[in-house]
Image (cartoon, rainbow, N blue to C red):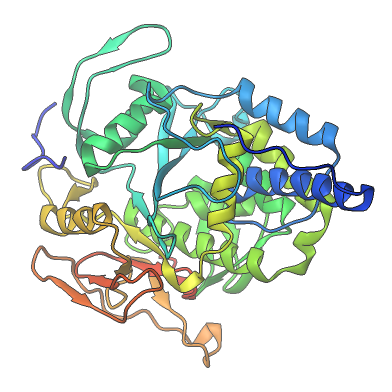
Length: 424
């Protein structure tokens, strides 16, 4: 749960009769297709694509299984195909300094969980909320043990991104559970190379910049306007901190949310993604670069998740920032939780309510682009501070019978919302 305040110190199915050859081939092809889709769709929030050979699918699944990570002794996933029953929580962790990371990204003393996105899918599958947890968020850490058996005592008042060094992916999950009060049954870990490979495999992702983005620290130099980013440029855009907004991790999260919403819009509308070669390239990147939790690294579970994620309406998917402030003098250049807003957000998520971010307070370094205005006409608005005051406002009933609630003091966007990044 949230600390009051951070310390300033340290059953077997009935057999079916054989199908005629033509129908049997169709079912076989459909299974191969959805298996590959699931590998990509879970991490890409529901990619829709074409098929692959059975040998390729087996190789991909074996690769995933070999890299699986045990994050919990409990495994309550379904073994039946179709949609997963109920809701689920998935933590996607982007790490810096993996074993295969290129030296051009610079030296690091430890592997850090620098990107942390907690995805909650509602139990009626009417919507989803993706919460970005800032790497610099000051939190209390639980006791953890790493793969070598080294035990780490609980720690107070430390950045969230030190969790990986205290016990790998399992410790990041445990820290996120302690922070949010949610039970996280699934997790995935990706590195820099995966980000580059995924972006290239889908042919780039369009992003908007109000002016040129130049950040030597992130190795990125991009022009103003709508830019389709690929390769190292995509990674640089996602990594840039000092070149965006107020230079804080919250501004970087705004850029990452623009990228994710643009990615979702592209994969739902781009007919090129029905190309089996492009889809397989994407699956190859994910399975070679991602590490999945043992609860997730099974074809049955992956298929179930993909079947849910690919049906989500963009308007019902919210990307929100964990409520925080950079104004606490005890932690300069760090992010401190705003307790009231955070507790309200996670209480509504736990209650399975549809979430709508307060779009009147976009994250720092982000503006909304009017649909009828050219990209270069965007002008950054005055910054609206996040406070602990306020409540929630019910909206129209959702597909699942719940009412979306506007989260006062919670910055973010919905997946159908187009934004621009504001470089410094």
